Image (cartoon, rainbow, N blue to C red; front, top):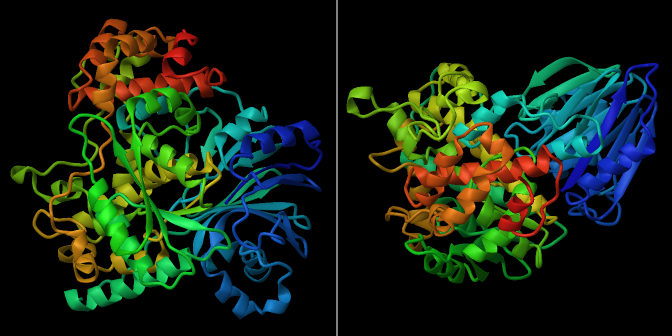
Length: 598
């Protein structure tokens, strides 16, 4: 995996100074610690930092063919098939990222339609002075842009644009309100004014430094009006084929890889599939557990699954002292903020796994494609049977913590924090069933802007590539054709995936009640409630939006089901604002950092 960045200019606009590119490369170095390379082209400058995964010796970028120059952050899983179709003699390297370049020579801006993989690609045509920016349909890999007078800049992370001085550290209060209420942000606009996302599946055509066209590629198949009925037995056979196909493609690597194993359905399914494939050495797996009272602990179940697959397994115990020591650094890696407390175990697991491997497979996407969340079952029920729409309430609704006037008025739920979700709901209204409509909302927003963003940033902070075999066109084509009864049955989501796991790994007990993988953040905060509450309450960014006395009370009551996540969100935001708006580096542990921030 890699980091990419660059600038394109309108004719007559001078190129940037070399130190701008150097600052961008420095900001992206954690994404590509194996070296930085630059290309200064007519009307464009490109930056690439490399994490070597495929063709370690010959895969440096930029890559060039004809009038095209490409830099990419991604993996193209159908690279072998593309090479066979085009002809190996046309390729100069063994890099899988050369395939998009040669496809572009043959198909122009439509080249992403032929790709199977995760990617953020920048491809500049010197003859046409045209830049194409393309992002994979699920949004696994990130890509951001900012426009300026005379041109456009892009990068894998907003932090690279900020550090290079290409965009100001100016907060969008509307997006901030959405972050506080949802714990993630939606749509095109980021929390930084002037910086926006290339949306999942988008390809932008930029000419003379301005966006002239946007094309979109959906991650989901177009379904016919009528489909022949699919029996459970036939669906299980198709799932087996699709899962093995995807896992085998995602294992392609010239460096060691492993698996994050939670003990849940998704990672257990990946482990089961991976165990069926030949490999020269033992598969490596990691599980996190939490040292806190009443914390869910699936370590024993995960270890048993790993033994059954003959994997080399390690369990990482995460303590409160570890969290308080490293939390400023954890939040600092989330420049595009997602206040999901799952960043904590993901970050620690990535740090541990990076000692042994460079690629991690993970189970993100199983809930969204196969309908695992309880909120889906609620969304499809009529209101008189307890049905409720998703994301209907904000994190702070009913807590009386946020200010009701001035800059915090929108935070009471009166204004716009739910606008992005509403837009996704409207776009999903044409889905064939209410269940698939609910899934579509999460596939458009929650998945790319929380789960995948968290995985990308936490792994890339440690020079690790993350791969998600459940988020693959082969898997999506199967999952989206399933009738609702093979997605949800009774109180069980992911019905077909559970049935497959029951057949191929009954030891996983896929129909048994699961403890879940909930981080005990409320318990940990409550143990330090008085100290943390006072520090968070005195931060200027918190006083703008919340009442200090209510903040202190919230932290002391953080052990509650509602109060814990709200306290965590304020703690996250206080640390995030210090790093990414004020531009201050972490200064020790969480207490030292907050003490120096007021």
